Amino acid sequence: MLLQTIQELAREYKQDCIAIRHHLHAHPELSYQEFETSAFVQSRLKEFGIPYTVMATTGVVGVVEGKNPASRTIALRADMDALPIQEENNVSYASVHPGIMHACGHDVHTSCLLGAARILQATRDQWSGSVKLIFQPGEEKNPGGASLMIREGVLEHPRPEAIVALHVHPGLPVGKLSFRGGKVMASADELYITIKGKGGHAAAPHLAVDPIPIAAQLIQALQQVISRHRDPHQPSVLSITSIHGGTTTNIIPGEVKLMGTFRAMNETWRFEAHDLIRRTTEQLVQSMGGNADLHIDVGYPTVYNHEELNEAARAAAATYLSPDDIEETELRMGAEDFGYYSQQVPGCFFRLGVMNREKGITSGVHTPTFNVDEDAIETGMGFMAWLGAALQAPAHK
Image (tube, rainbow, N blue to C red; front, side):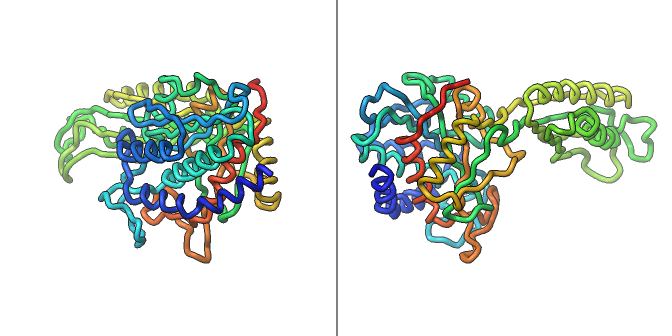
């Protein structure tokens, strides 16, 4: 009966949640600037009769209490921030803020969680325990809103037995969900390197210390940190994504700046690699007559799905939809600050299919044409509510 009721309410609330998504999509806000979004979420929770608190400036945390609310707590999480991308979609709800767009689906995540909250509130006399609703800022930018929310106590009073989040998947057809146990997404650290040499005339390189060939050598050497030191069974990526130096053809610059990213699936190797990156940078640059300033901005940890919780969620999905609608999520070197939560309590981070080739909805996240088949919102909010109400969370191990 509860399953059927949740499915019926998801259908009933679908259009309202699509309208919520349109509002959020049209009014995107960058990381840690989600003031209007936060106020909107608060207004909807108040309308639903759900108590909430505000933390980490723009974060919102609501609690829906079922029967015997102290028996257990499940947390459901959505992120709210947008990206600095100019939208190119020709839709009525396109972003009204130039250069800012919900290009990663966080508007969908927030809409689904608001829909789930409404369903849970309407059915609270039919399930036991409590569901904590976490609307989080700043997923797209270090240090990650999850870390700030945890620091301010989002996983306490009450402490959840498990935490669950969905993420749109533009490669998965609408109406499907995907799951993966164990390692799901990589850690992500940012690299900032300044190579300092000695500027001079391009016709007299012997009188200068040219940082450009030093940079070229360093980029190649850093690749060997991965290829020659990493266990080949451990996925890892180091990419130098930006190089800036020099102003014209006949001047050797005094410095070159590099930026890049380092990603890993193993936390031990991650920090071993940091030491190798530092040592390689310092020794190579000095051997060629220059000096290096290196800053590694330590970012999000790996996302690890608790195996028992993942299997329970997968089974719940097969019940809510059908076994044919459930797929295996591929291992991804992208990063997500959900990893902070899954370090603290058992976590399950799953994917919501939003692709529809017939409608031309195929663009990837972080692109100016990203969009979703909004039928996915009914699936997302209904299944999130079903998990919150029915999931028997495994004990932390």
